[in-house]
Length: 108
Image 1 (cartoon, rainbow, N blue to C red):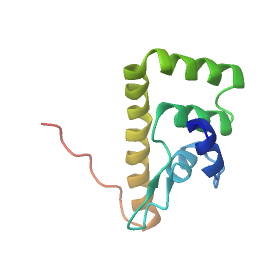
Image 2: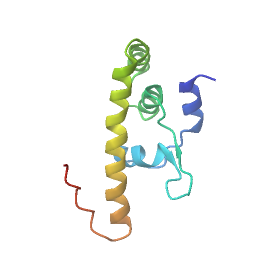
Image 3: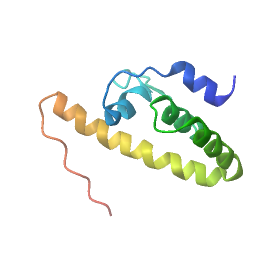
Image 4: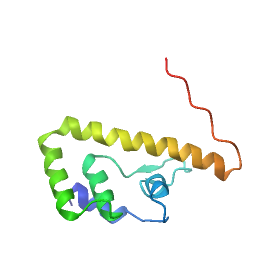
């Protein structure tokens, strides 16, 4: 089974808001002792984008091909949405527990 097919078989869309889809559908189940990361490679991100209708099939095919040609760029491109997802998750988790979102950590 190819990477893209593996991810498609695990994807379960739960929300109707894209920002929550990124938080929820790409990690199973975050509160467990062993959460499962579904965005393990760039092709997983492309597959997720296709599943939530962000990418047309032609665009996702082109992005998959570019990832093979530029693996470092694909890795860099994956790290940004994963970082964004983690920040959003922390914000929404705080709100869900009726606590104010945590202050940003300062960069040194």
